[in-house]
Amino acid sequence: MKISQLNTRIEQTWDRIFGTLDRDGQPLNIQIRRMIVEAIETGLLAPDTRLPSSRELAVRLGIGRNTVTAAYQQLIDEGFLAARQRSGIFVQKITRPALTPPSPKRAADWSGRFAIKPSRLAQITKPRDWRSYPYPFLSGQYDPGLFPTNNWREAVRVTSSVQEIQVWAADMIDDDDPDLIEQLRMKVLPRRGILAHPGEIIITLGSQQALSMIVHLFIGRDTTVGLEDPGYPDLRNMVKLSTRKSVFLTSDADGLVPDEAFARCDIAFLTAGHQCPTTTVMPLERRRDLVEAARRDDVLLVEDDYDADLSIEADSDIPSLRSLGGGGHIIYVGSFSKVLAPGLRIGYVVAPKPVIDELRVLRRLMLRHPPTNNQRSLAAFIALGHYRQHLARAGEAIRERATLIARLLPVVMPSCVFHRGDGATSFWIEGPPLFDARPVVEAARAQGILIEAGDIFFSDPARGRNMFRIGFSSIATNRIESGIVRLGAIVEDHCRRAAASY
Image (cartoon, rainbow, N blue to C red):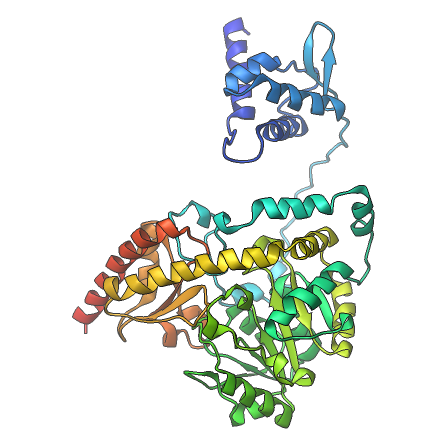
């Protein structure tokens, strides 16, 4: 091979390895280490290959030489690279097990082996790359600009000492971090009017796992289950997989109605704080009626209070159902996903001790316990006062955004009706009767705007065909006005088309 061809091939190799350096991502020395390790592990860099000098690579990448030197030294310490006197930096030989190519076999018929087929159920879908869209009006996501990065880092540092690591690195079997349980009891639950003993709380992987475990524990094939309609699609699917007797309960402007259908239920799930998806805040009088009806008719209530902590608006500061004296018939589900970060995956259940004891054994069979390091860090975050500070800051941002959107919507979407309960992080929007939200969702997405069609929330999708939801916890305030104006133009255009086709 000619020297020029060899040099070209070498250049192409370095481009393949280092061509994706992200200057806005992880620290550069960590990215360089990951790229070199991946190239070694995949065989792109063979043993004894000489790497560019630290000076050469720094010039190639346009970064400081010290950054490259630090990355090389760490990889030398870890045995991936070796420094040879007066020769340079070389790839070490890595021992790998021999891989035997699989023998060709006829593909198994997996579909005939599944006991259930959850993929056939209607589900909420959101683009995985939603952050790349300029106007992500999505619920359940978060704006990185609101995350308390420095305060969270402090909490992680506090729980990263040798002594702390020895505590959380152990297998907790089916237990939870006692510090987090205590912080929940003393500083989180009292905000919702709830007093609980340590044995009445269990930590979960977000409210999703909490709801799933409750469904597993209480619902059999002949259990009558009451659900909101519209309501949370994932819960509807969980229940559908578990029982033949789901009942869609009556709702009015105040939320769930404790009528005869409710009285026939064994268990009922509801979102009283902010109804999903309409955001309705259930008034105190209706809450009391529900608690009394549950006690009278022996209906177990599951209260999903998924984002109550974010609200700083006075009218939405209504006590939880569990705080109204019906603790024996009410299971409370809370989460930090909406108020802090979805990726944290920490939720909790508050219930009578016999229920928690059973849930603890059930959780152990599933995953033993949620990661204790995350539990410990969150406990420190709350104990240091950062959680209260975050709620105040995030709550103010939510109120500012809601005020802005509430001012814009009647101007840019005059054909629609809007609803947002105090403290909610989304608006529920209803178009004219002939309006179809699905094409609007697609047209908006083509212009970089993400919204959610409303039909997925209904047991009969046709009932929600003319509705959609826009969230604003995931979009920066300075992006809202231009996004809403663009969305309004799309919505009104489709409203005119719907009217013309009548």
